[in-house]
Image (cartoon, rainbow, N blue to C red; front, top):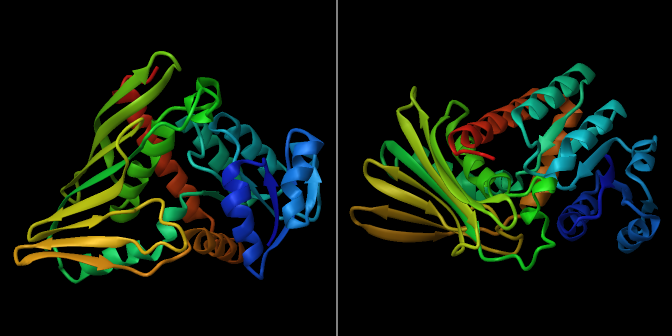
Length: 321
């Protein structure tokens, strides 16, 4: 896979670009920024080309796929332009600001036979396979409910794009998106948002923290999710069953050298199961390569729509401004 990167964001330079280069089947070709100077600065450590505009990168014939780490409000424009240029797309979460954007982009990708993958890399960490194995073994009996939380302390200043309304900022599209994804990732795509609450920061004009209640009527499951900015740090999900409970303690941000743990609570006591370290960025890129090679795009496109519908439900019921 020959890759281009559309924007020199921190997550691109620190995590995704090194991960692209680390896979022998990949070639990192170029990175684009809004100026030639910043593009060259991002490109230099990787020994690749720097392009001084996003259009210049999309015009290159030696790029098959693009990674887009731009602010949320720019995703729809540049995802669709990349698709029109014949490129497969890996886009940072949240992939789109509205359900209408998601539906339009997915329809375009399907018409062109191209991939869009939303970069929730945490799904590809092996800790979640361990959780699923415990569930399959009946470690907590029948699953009754899910609770997922993700929130963090202040980021440091007005310049943070998460605090800027015009860039698609706000906690729902940032940390809240993970908790919604955790619910559907673990237990399927049939959850509906039944109630939601969003609290706003009037200074910045973005949602600051919130929560939602999701139900899958067919499975008889419900999920309680909560998220926020300037909160005590939480990065977990809990699965409560008829005979026990499982808690993944570092569910979304486990670095490649970190050994996450799962806490198993049963009537006989509590165990902390320390799991192997894993590189979810590497795993995610291998998954991307595989679906492109196999041309099996539909599952990931449908996941984008499922996620967009859940976000839309929270926005509608939570009083989104």
